[in-house]
Image (cartoon, rainbow, N blue to C red; front, side):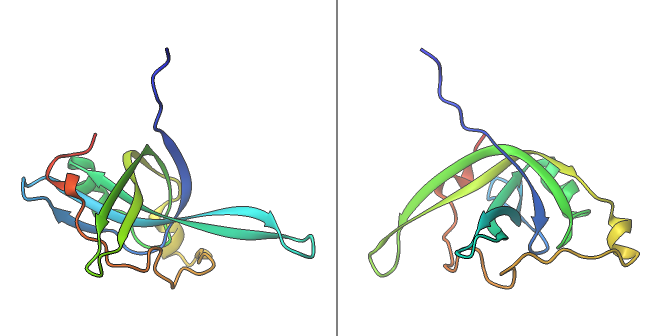
Length: 146
């Protein structure tokens, strides 16, 4: 019998500047939002961009290095896995969320491209929060979820 597979590969742009924090164990974790555009047909049959928004976490030394180089609008490639969690909200309702845990992040443009006035990418709806809720810390944050 074959084992299960949990792997995701994304190419997109950062929707905000990444935020670096440290777990109680001292492990660095970088949290960032990524927009990935897809194409779909609208009711009139025209092809339009459909943005998808993902919350991404990077752990360890890579998190610290990336925090020094990544800014909103940068194009990156991510190779990682999905991490699902659930919790009970203050109102008693059940909530759940899926994050991407990146094992590898690649720069797909240069910082100079943005600094020299190249057209910056702003995904449709990027001003809106991807989740809309304030999410509690992941119960797994005390352990690096690899």
